Length: 112
Image (cartoon, rainbow, N blue to C red; front, side, top):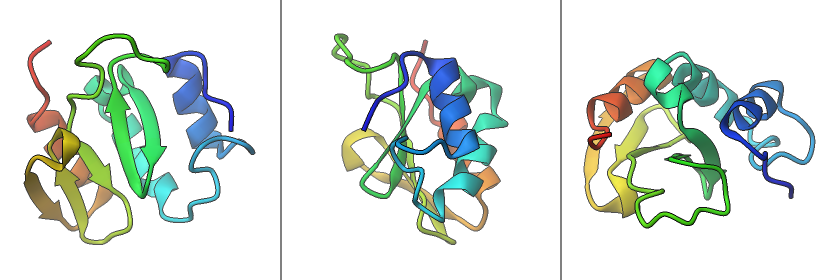
């Protein structure tokens, strides 16, 4: 499975459900991707679906910074949609819609 080389391409491939893209075959992912993409602050992060969750990385893989994966993420098998702090450190909330999940991620973004 190829990784997109940059943030804009990663979003485009996910929105288009491009064949070979990580998560492209997951039926419950597109609505979460669309909701997250609608949030300007999340559009600036690299979307990375993995293990039933949409993660947001600070840069495209391979990541060399220690804080590249310190952003909350959305478990996309809902509703309800669960939002966790990085590394499953804490459940930040369960919400009814993908838009609410994306907004919850934004409200819990770390500084920077």
